[in-house]
Structure formats: structure tokens, C-alpha cells
Length: 225
Image (tube, rainbow, N blue to C red; front, side, top):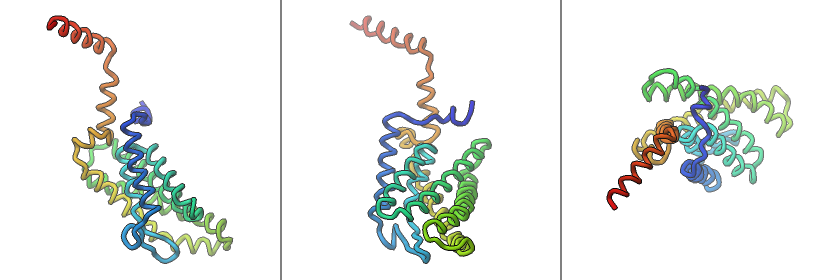
């Protein structure tokens, strides 16, 4: 059984409702930032923000597909007022989530502590983001600003450190906040692989057992009457 078969796209109303809540957080952080707190400007027209934190929580709790939906929602929230900024930000968060997916595929093979998993998430998430954005920035800078290739490379190098800082904030913030959710509450809300497994076990009950249970229930009600 492949990884995607073990982790199907969620279609239940509870997961969709949770996605809507977290996406609303993402959009709110973009549309109504608190300057100096949730949105800190750095040289080079780059901002350090909290937008990626709920996206990481969505990835951990609801899976890769829903996290990409959140990235798309974030992109639209930025693009209507700043298409150039949306292009840079969208690619950056996309690469971060792809890195987290690679780390998750690795952690699923072995029994690891939370600290080890967090370390791997950081290594893969940061690496995928800085490598992906270093290459992407070169082409985006040339396309949007019409600068020579050499200048675009220099500009891309300049953004490496801010991207590292942003990735660390997103991953550490998202993982820590996700694990602060009580386990019972997470299961009831349908967050995480354990919730999916529990739901799958219920759905996989043989129809014969379900029918037998229904018959026993009917007989009990008949006897009581």
C-alpha cells in the first residue's frame, strides 16, 4: 500500500471546517498584519511574518493536500494587492511544505522522539526552502525587475538568510503549537494521523458485523417492549 493510499485526501465535513478555520487565520495574518509583531520588515523589501505557522499546523494535522490549499489561499490574499510579493511568498511556502513532506516520509520509517522529528523538519524544510528559493529568486528577479543575471544571483544570495529565519519561525512555531493541543482534543477534532487511523478502522468494519450489531440491537429493543 502506497503512502497516498494510507493517507487519502480527507473529505469529511469536520476536516473541511478545520481547514476553513486555519485558512481564515492565514488570510487574516496577511490582510491585517500587526506591524512590528506579526509583520517585521527587513532590508530588501522582505518581511518576517507568522503566516507560515498555521500552514505548518495544517500540514501536521490535516495533511499535504490541505496545506497546499492554505498556501494557495495565502497567495490569493497577497496577489490581489501585490502580485510580485505573492509570487515570491507562494514559492517560498511551497518549498517549505515539500521539505516537511520529505521529512515526514523519513520519520514514518523509524520510531523517533519529537525533538528528533522537529530537527528533521527543520533540516529538510529550511534546506528545500533556501535551495528552491535561491534558484527561483534568480528567475523572478530577472522577470519582474529586468536586471542582468549576475545581479539577480547577488540578489538571490541576499535573501538566503531571511528565508532561513522565516523557515525556522514557521516550522518551530507550527510544530510547537500543534503539539500543545491536548491529544484527546486533537483526536476529537480529527487532527493528525491517529485520528485518521481511528476513523479508518471504524469505516473498515465488515458489513456483516454492522448488520449483526443492528440485529442484536433490534432484538434487544423488541424484548424490552
